[in-house]
Length: 100
Picture 1 (cartoon, rainbow, N blue to C red):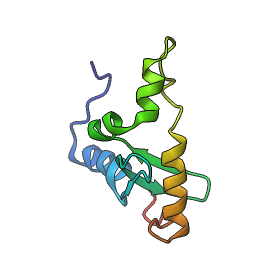
Picture 2 (picture 1 turned 45 degrees about the vertical axis):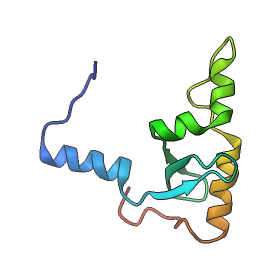
Picture 3 (picture 1 turned 90 degrees about the vertical axis):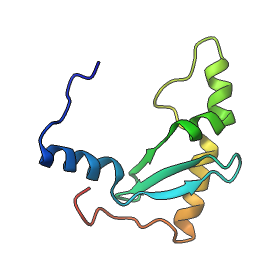
Picture 4 (picture 1 turned 135 degrees about the vertical axis):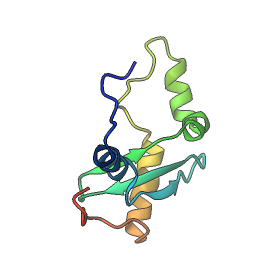
């Protein structure tokens, strides 16, 4: 159960902008899982996973199958490398021009 459910139009728009604005679709160069990526700075990367990408990622499947499970904040190094390549190639803009 959600502890906070936004109801005002302004709050819903803020939520949409924070989670979806300026996302660039990036496909993993290994498994082709496709996620939304936003880089507000050189050191900040926001990744929006979806169910299809989670299902396609063999790294997450391997970790999920381990007895201790997958740590929720541990990313996929193959996807990180794919995002770094997209930044180097100029496919992902760096900077929070709209505050998000």
